[in-house]
Image (tube, rainbow, N blue to C red; front, side, top):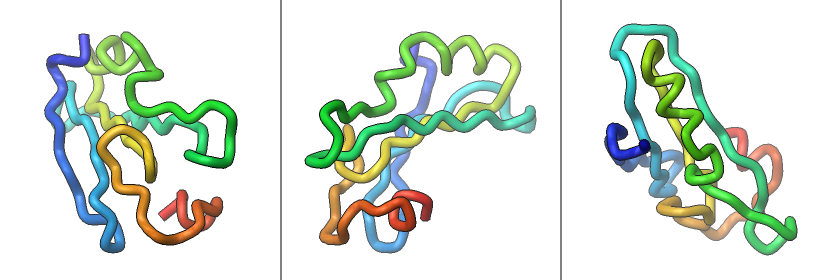
Length: 88
């Protein structure tokens, strides 16, 4: 279901950040952000955690699915993963 999404990499404050983008360009945007922190929480996820939900939203919306630092294709970086760092 996620095969209709384009994989893109953005530079976010020097960190290579992976996003998946799909859906209807120009429509209302829905952003999916997973939980978990590598090495801190017992379960760390990535964009895959959402299953079919992004594809369902993409039927009528512009959808962005973000991989947080250390998850999937996003670099971990050298900073401690505090809420401030994760919210950038």
